[in-house]
Image (cartoon, rainbow, N blue to C red; front, side, top):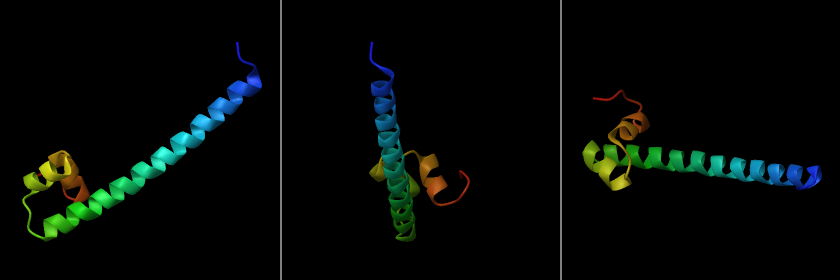
Length: 69
C-alpha cells in the first residue's frame, strides 16, 4: 500500500489536471458558441450548423441564446 504522502501527491496532480481540462472545455465552448453565431449570421441552416459542428440541435439553440424552436 502506498504511503499517505504519495497518495496526496497523486490526488493533487489529478486535481491540477482536471482544472486544466475544465479550462480547455470552457475555451472550446466559447469558440464553438462564437463560430455557431457567425455561421447563423452567414445564413446557414441550424441543422446544417449542428451537422457540421457535430453538435446537437439543442447545442446550436443554446449557443444562439434561444430556446428550442
